[in-house]
Amino acid sequence: MKTLIPSEITPVQLQTVMQTAVSPRPIALASTVDKDGNSNLSPFSFFNMFSTVPPILVFSPSRRVRDNTIKHTLENVLEVPEVVIGTVNFPIVQQISLASTEYEEGVNEFIKSGLTMKDADLVQPKLIEECPVNFECKVLEVKSLGDQGGAGNLVICEVQKIHISEEYLDENGNLDQAKLNMVAR
Image 1: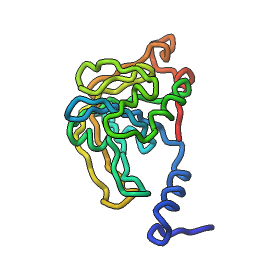
Image 2: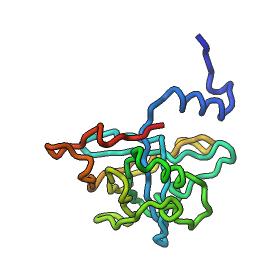
Image 3: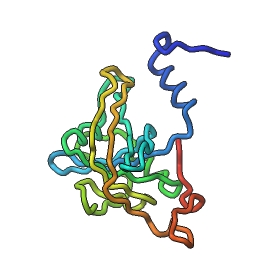
Image 4: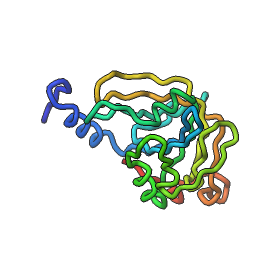
């Protein structure tokens, strides 16, 4: 059996091992706004649900390993503690790839990816019309896990409202896993 000590390998090697071993990981498409109301859209595979009552989702915009910078999403949730988290399925996988591109600050990934902004009911960030499910969330806490490249930042979100596209429901009005055709990393 191969054994690794995290402190004895490079951050890139560690990230590769962890991301490959911990899979599949669902993808959150996070819609945020900055203090001026500019929209940002970015996918995150460091994401999951962690509580039902209260309904808690957590995603982690990690510091970039290559240069220790942070994503616009993290800056935005620190300025405006709200987020819409959309789920990702195969019909929109190409748009998600375009949204993951690193654009300059102020570039709207909705436009670059061809995804449609839709007003949310309770939060400032936009819903993503093409996502099967959108969660309107208040950010309860952002927990920094370190200051080195690769360190995560846990964005702990409480779901305020859920929007489900009816095409993904079964005959009883419940989400149908087969129809969802979700994407994971």
